[in-house]
Amino acid sequence: MGEAPAFFVDDLQKGFPNGFDLKSKGSATATVIGNKAYLIGGADDESTLSIGVQIFDQTRGELVHPIVLGTIPKPCKGHSVLLLSEDQILIIKRGSTLDDCIWFLEVDTQYVREQRKILGTEVVAWSKGVRGYAGKPVVISGPSGVGKGTLISMLMEEFPSMFGFSVSHTTRAPRGMEKDGVHYHFAERSAMEKDIKDGKFLEFASVHGNLYGTSVEAVEVVADAGKRCILDIDVQGARSVRASSLEAIFIFVCPPSMEELEKRLRARGTETEEQILKRLRNAQAEIEQGQLSGIFDHILYNDNLEDCYESLKKLLGLDGNVIASPKSSIKGVDLPMDLSLSKIDQKVIINCGNPELKTASKNLIVMDLSSLKGGAPGRTRGLDFYAIDSFSDCLNGFNQLR
Ligand SMILES: Nc1ncnc2c1ncn2[C@@H]1O[C@H](COP(=O)(O)OP(=O)(O)OP(=O)(O)O)[C@@H](O)[C@H]1O
Ligand SMILES: Nc1nc2c(ncn2[C@@H]2O[C@H](COP(=O)(O)O)[C@@H](O)[C@H]2O)c(=O)[nH]1
Image (cartoon, rainbow, N blue to C red):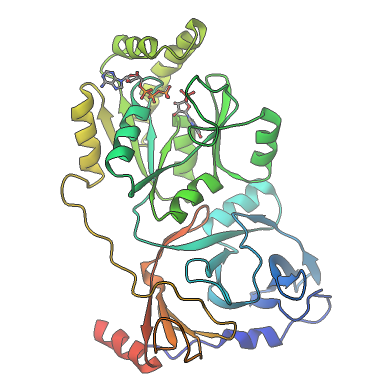
């Protein structure tokens, strides 16, 4: 037998701890984890309600305003919460489409703990649930001129619906054909430094005299499109991502020789002589680190471009046996304003209680937590929904799996 429904979460909303002013018009929810109550929501006006987060520390009797990382959900007309674990709260936006209704507030995951240490204050992080089964992000590193950009362009051209490029920020000047927002977000150093301080970057590094970095948003945008994210970053950046909680595949691209690397850099014709020399000086150390640091899962040698591209596809599982993503069962539904949530083992059941639910005669929508991957920093991938007639369908299905 599976477990009985854990609880109906809306009950939580009735019992705020005493001793503080919630400043809400009755739309906020409180979820208690240990000695902390996470207060989510608050009124902007009568119709749309922003989803702010405050923490009431019951031990100290203090209301804390945490640093909130990740993209904050857009205001909505109301929300429901469900405590998933000691480190994560599920938020369902009422009256939203299934593509924008599932959000996770991480309160004590590995990422949040790391950020709390770095930022020295209370931190929470949002991660939006996105549909689709895109694989782990792919980090590609290697010395300047080795051909990373060329390989990535080939991949994106052959598999446009599968991969999306993480557009980095940089303080370097654009090259002739480069477009802001496409190749890079070209940024002022002071603005970028402020954003780094505010926790908006997954990683950053000083490379060849300029600042480069991957914003959390850059990775989220790709996941929102249901695509697999590709990051073209230097070895220091790869090291930071490896140390972070973003699960990724790490690939290092090596040149056949330093002479060939120099030839490619010069032939590209995008750098001054001084910059070429700087990049070549840095290349030697990067190649050593790439091969010996243990950061990378795979090393590719880019001698012949076509051969190297074939090897890249092979290690990404793209050599002819592309597995089709499972199709989501429900599409195009708007969740009603009036819903309740329950949890049976790894399944969250959204009770829409509305026979006029547009897609189906069924009022119970199931979301399977066991298929979820990723999380902050970035999106929570692998979201899928299906409809059932009754709670017993869920229990039966669950029993059959055992
Ligand atoms: N296997 C190869 N053989 C010959 N030329 C190549 C090969 N791969 C890439 N190139 C060429 O080398 C040059 C550098 O490639 P690319 O710009 O992709 O390097 P990169 O690693 O992205 O560099 P950076 O880190 O500076 O952005 C380009 O002109 C590209 O056409
Ligand atoms: N750590 C990071 N490194 C990055 C990022 N974006 C690019 N890069 C690396 O910088 C060098 C130089 O790039 P170029 O476009 O000026 O030739 C190259 O090795 C890139 O991989 C980033 O966001 N973070």
